[in-house]
Image (cartoon, rainbow, N blue to C red; front, side, top):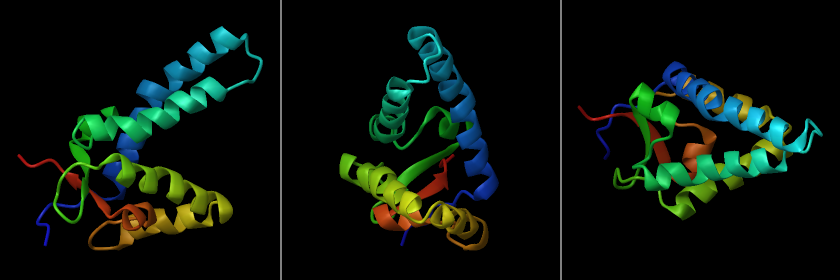
Length: 136
């Protein structure tokens, strides 16, 4: 059993906001400059997807926002950082489920993080992950 301290809703939400501000806003601005505001956000979407998919793999379970907040993604089975397969399950499969349910599953997922003792969301269960506070 993993003895990590699970990260709750607000700290995870804060990390998401930091990622949006630090990474998302500059990407949108660069995209607007490069496309002349044509509304073609394909490059922004690709870079954003790759950021959320790959950075936790190469940076020990962190994104920039998670690192600032002192939380990270780990596999429940062994406490190790996520692999590519884990992150594909977490981001792609869960994203498809959230889309197919028109966002209802995303609301359920957020509620799970707020209400469950282990603070795991739907995408955590799909991928076998959890978000935990850093070990000090």
